[in-house]
Image (cartoon, rainbow over all chains, first blue to last red; front, side, top):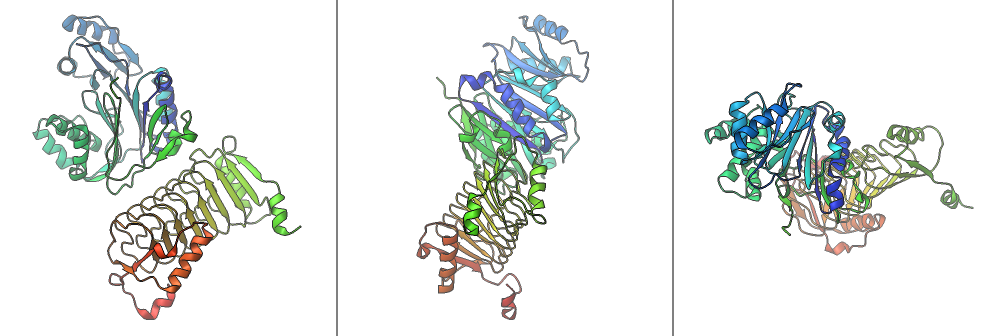
Length: 301
Length: 238
């Protein structure tokens, strides 16, 4: 099953309460995915020349302050880590590529959940309702966010196997469905230098998008080529620095509903998830067409 | 006072799903099959809940104010259920008789495998509308999505808008009437002539559904009878 939600703020009021809305939407999708939950929130961009990492540690006594000081020694600056449950967000005074590479080689025990300038990814096993509380999502502000509740079918229930999957800097993917050609595709993508951390089918879709975009495709083109190269069932929601995109496979067994008001654009596996938003009763509401890419992005002021 | 007038003035039983559990509501509606109760019901704050007014078996009228989730009015028998909003997957699935009306749009598999009664969707229905229908009639004011009337056995599907890809794939003896464009016909589904009996059926369905459309604008589609073992001697069985 699985549940997906997405929220894109069009007003400062919604940006201010993004975490609260996201938490409410995710809780509505609790029953669709009681195995694990996760969110990607786009917020508080790192200053120019810096980047932002979200890291996960399996050790509850992880010394995030010590790690921040180490990073400051190497790259300069002195930002405090912002810790949420098993995750921490660190702002590093270098680009995302260098920051991520440093963590991977110096702290292989940590998992890089996301890297970029605005993205933060939090995900964990357990009931979505509890995840929302444990990570204190409700106080988060931001421009847009995606969320996922997982009912696992293709691989183990672990923190790493939870969604969203990062697909590149400031990019992430959530998925409702299952892919049947992920093993072959993973092998092909590994030959192209794409790294995988799990046996999860969605991570392959994330890697596929990262590869297509590395080869020069736009997000829209990369998603359109999914229609040819991915075999299986999917409703995807992809987060970018400026917005999000939605794609359903051509058979469209996996549900999705979109709704829009003057204040927000929202996506959910079901209307239940959207019904908790302010003004939802009067929202324009529709079902995304199979095989059609929908994109919302912030218009530069 | 006539019986009808008495009903109209009778109090409407209002159930708020914001404060009453879905299970309690459905149990009260199910009890009407065996014991008397209110005739007119109004359900408020459905907020996309699943299985609202599912499994009814009584001559009652149920109005739902708002959008409903999966399987609304599923297995409906005798009752009239009206949704003043949109309906999600599996609307009126396996309906047996009665009337189900959705004022907005319906998601995929509306009227799936229905045996009887009438389903009216005033807006659009999505993919697989009327899949495996077995005798119910469906009238859609807007368009239907891909694979509609897949393996449809009997009954009629009236589409006032367009139909998506593979309409009537592997169809048996259901009758399909489409006013707009058909993106493509599925395996063994062909256009057929609109005879007088079809015009009469179409006119009557549109009238009951309270949809104003000219019968002359519709085309009829049905089975070419090449894919399944159709024997003319068995025609009366459909």
